[in-house]
Image (cartoon, rainbow, N blue to C red; front, side, top):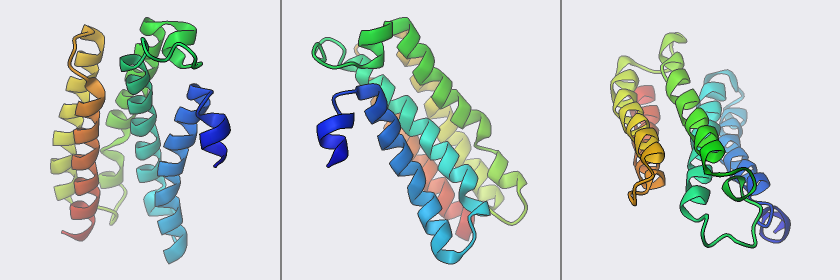
Length: 156
């Protein structure tokens, strides 16, 4: 309810709220089993990729968001692209770390997350091309594959 009436109007705050809520899901799961350590990186990866996607969505909606305080409307498209790309690239750079933390995920995670990372990297290229293609859609597919990597890599 707070998001709908307050944070949504201040889009940059709303973006952080949405990304934070998604990242908290991993922490909630870890707290249920009494071990937050294995999910800290997944929470961070989720937060960064969701925040990057939310800013990319604001870039796509910049013409219609005349009454909203979004990052692209407030600071301009180049700055917003930089923020979005930074968040996504941060997630890509951190994504191999869970594999190197012994016992958290198998090599299968690394193989599948490499596909997700390739999609994320391509979405950043599309983001800076300013084409009608929507990079946030590509990011969504990257997130789906990353989620599959989390699940499969943990159990296989």
